[in-house]
Length: 242
Length: 278
Image (cartoon, rainbow over all chains, first blue to last red; front, side, top):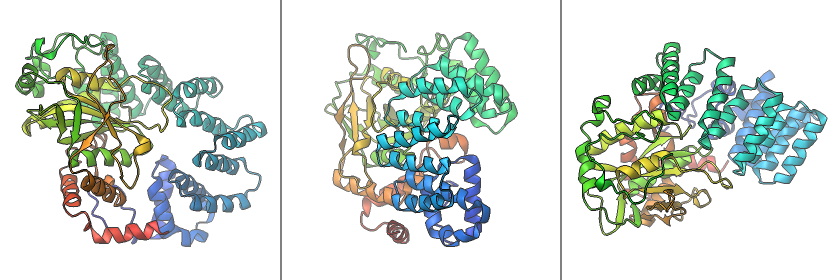
């Protein structure tokens, strides 16, 4: 076993029981962590032989493993998971989305779009399919189109925090700090107790510069530090801005 | 972003200003450099002044040491879904026959690369570290998250700031299509000049590598052993301050891989092979 000093998971730890792996997967699902390599390795090494014992979580885990396998371009594992899910839920749009993502993973954009549009025809409010279509623009590097589509999406689904975060990141890529700040303001409205949002907003204001922005940055860095005194970025921010 | 006046040279700028990464570029924050504001930077002017006042030849070639190359590649491979960036360090007397030799690399961020505050903190700390080790900040590297970039985006402000302080600096990009698990060619391209509009003239030239075949082979081994998990960038350090962003432990691992290319951790390599066969 590798001596891992950085506190990361040592994925080749064969001494983890299947229950521990199942719990780790659940944590990563809830926190939406993108640890695709580790998920696939741990599934193959430990959890797959005991998959029948997972009970209610079985299909959640299968979906998680499928997405991780697509991320790692391990099509064998992804296809196996998709077949199992497809047999259990033959008419499910959620399962259909996996098929669209598989097309994306092999670079087959036309079929991916076809499947996603089929899903949207069946259910116009299917948020996952709409987001996937936007993600496809980003995946080919066309961030300008992704930004405009995401703006359209947010006109209908204004409370989608994930989408606001993504839009903020896209604006930051383009150095559009005032618009990125607007996105962060929306997030702050929905979650005023989230120290990370305060800290990110403060960083954007700091980057914009100017006396007013600096005052705002100072206020939000302080608020982030107050909400979480261990937030090192907030503490450094207070130091930088004062 | 302030356009750099191509006719101004660092030699005419007063060399006593403390090294302030984003001064003057962002709003009115840093109109008046104040030495007292940045105590850690106040001891820096001397190291900057010596290279600012000396003649800077036109650097056209960039050469990476094996250590710097491995760190850059491991950083990019650690976060395949994200853009990563970092700074490059060169020896203090960085002028040798028109070749800029990059001794070391410091991986910085993998999230929100364009934001200033943490970048300033990082640059201050790196500047301090560099002068202790007789190095200077001589370049900036970035690996984009996009495989195909159809949008043209501005280069990071940090690279221009580094260029202001050291006009021979380089801007290194990683070409994703040339990056592979089995390293066969160098995927890094460097630009050392600004064009007339003050932007980096991209694409640059392919970066040279010291002991190319040995380094490429070592990099492949390190990737296969997933040594990138041990790499600590500045973002990791900010999340957990006990992690060492200078990566001194990783340096030893990299040196081992360079010195013993066929004799890496045997227990790990067996597991790696077993998983590859699954």
